[in-house]
Amino acid sequence: MNIKSSKILIIDFGSQFTQLIARRVREAGVYCEVWAWDVDAALIREFDPKAIILSGGPESVHMENAPKINPVVFELNLPVLGICYGMQSITDYFGGDVVPSDEKEFGYAQVKVTDDSRLLSGIFDEKEHQLDVWMSHGDKVSIMPEGFVKTSETSTAPVTSFEHTDLPIFGIQFHAEVEHTKQGRKIFDRFLFDISGCDKLWKTDNIIEEHVANIRKQVGNDKVLLGLSGGVDSSVVAALLHQAIGDNLVCVFVDTGLLRYKEGDQVMQTMAEGMDINVVRVNAQQRYYNALAGVNDPEQKRKIIGNLFIEIFEEESRKLTDVKWLAQGTIYPDVIESAASATGKSHVIKSHHNVGGLPDDMELKLVEPLRDLFKDEVRKMGMALGLPKAMVYRHPFPGPGLGVRILGEVKQEYAEILARADHIFISELINWDLYDKTSQAFAVFLPVKSVGVVGDARRYEYVIALRAVETIDFMTAKWAELPYAFLELVSRRIINEIDKVSRVVYDISSKPPATIEWE
Ligand code: XMP
Image (cartoon, rainbow, N blue to C red):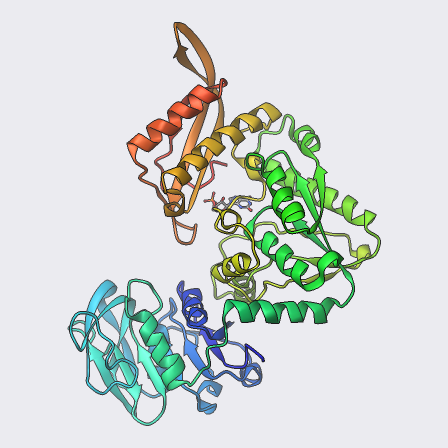
């Protein structure tokens, strides 16, 4: 069985929601890929999709150099769904017109759906014909394209969806892919299954089976090396490769001394003892503390930590003479972002260092088994492969670890205090059932001394800051409104249990203007 045989092509016009479209399609059980709008026609034909979805985008169809639909999209005679800019570019292509709205429409709108829409009829919220949708657009359709009929409207945008009378071509002005459009999943199901006739093959068990078979085909009986970090992606790569090639997988786990509380032991317990995976643990704590002594600048600290990792990883890999492959935990959003940035059409946010940088003379070939998966798919795969939930659903942790959560110079003493304080904070978040409600939470070590009173004695000790944020994309974030009673308990525990801390503060800055990390 080829689980990618029934697949959708998503053409990206640069919307911030394009990846959400892909996730909705995948969740529905259909494989899809996201390609930039200016991709070659030949590649589109070769991809052989069942249907095509055109994303939204920041441009206006009348702007100079505005992205256009490649005619091949319609020459293939496939079902096409245009969302927002996608709908406007269908309008432009078929001879209609688009004008700027008096004001940008952003937020909820209620649209009135006509009786005979093949895409929307029978899908409604409270009352038949009424659909609550999420809008975000500056332009609207002013003249209908030829051959199309209107299928819904609001008072401000007289055409909020349309479809061709004979061909399976549809446009929606609203964003069915965002959670705020509650019936969005039903609209995608209608398009994918009723209109496009896709099969539901993209399911976790099938995905694992296919990926295992592909890995076996790709690496054969060769040995594969993997840098294990304790994070979700590398752990899932390890579990998947282990299932595919067993002992031919060798993992190197570097304990930097800048990891979470007892994380090194936990990684060994879960992966080496629990799952019987080959893991070489390198205790490099002192090397990191020595390399970081006297260094205050955050960017320099990041560089030192990253370079030392590569150096140690390289030393370890040289000891393994018969390794042919290097595995990496690259996931699909990384692939989309680096491809899109080549066209200059997407706004790339950041590229954090991945394990890499091995010298060319080792000539390791790359195996990246998660390259076609979104994070939620990677997580589902991790659970199905038997990884613990705590590992799979963990908050993200930066590559430089506690190195950027100790302000200024990093010292072993500070790292130990911070790891303990962080552990208290995180354990209580879990106890209070708040961990999954925050997107990222951690403690920060401030190397300043503040006064406290213990019994009758005054003492001057360090300050710990607690940070917890809610965010979807980590580009913007709001500080989490944790209950006062919870903060009080965590503060008391940290000060009582850790001698070297006399004060705990809570960070109430949102991003922007603050960043999530303190350095
Ligand atoms: P900021 O601090 O930029 O963080 O708001 C956004 C997200 O990125 C993570 N982060 C990093 N991850 N290496 C990483 O691998 C880094 O140097 C780094 N700096 C920030 C941060 O934890 C948050 O999730």
